[in-house]
Image 1 (cartoon, rainbow, N blue to C red):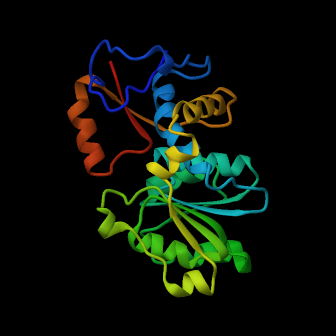
Image 2: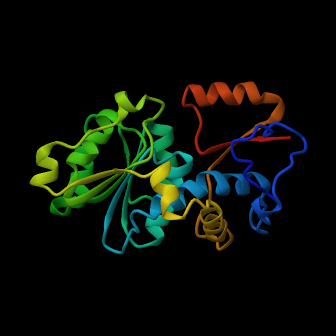
Length: 244
């Protein structure tokens, strides 16, 4: 069984107490670490997708596409028939995005990455930008959006909101019809009436069916300090899980 403990401490304990209603049976095709990822990053991914369901023929751009949520968004959009562009920082992460099935994997640290996106999508542009990077990367992604496109924000890559969040210009709104929405926190909770179990159940079902495969960065519990250092330096890929 696997459960999200919520805001209470106890994640490092050998034994933890939680409400039985929080428990999920682990599907046969998942190990415990992957199940932890699905009720963490998987749950958040399902919450983000409440705001935009990719469709056949649509074009989706995912930033931080080698991360835990980015990996699942790429897979989900690809399964839905969308053209999927995954942007990540550095060659190793770009290769992970490519192996995850993206139609185009680009390095957002390279100055020519927007040109590579335009070469693929042409006049169509990008319909939806799933963004957890913010800053200059988000601004470039917004410039790539088609008229009427969506910018869905779920993070700023460790920056403060004031530093990382991107505000739409008047031209974006009035002339291009672009919308930007923060989708984590209260907006996400409101969609499910505050019941995160709805999103956890959906995430586990997608994984059980083999449609979603979480990226898991595993560390032995004894190396917890190394796991924290890796998180602080953005050296991780996927959901970080400590294994006993």
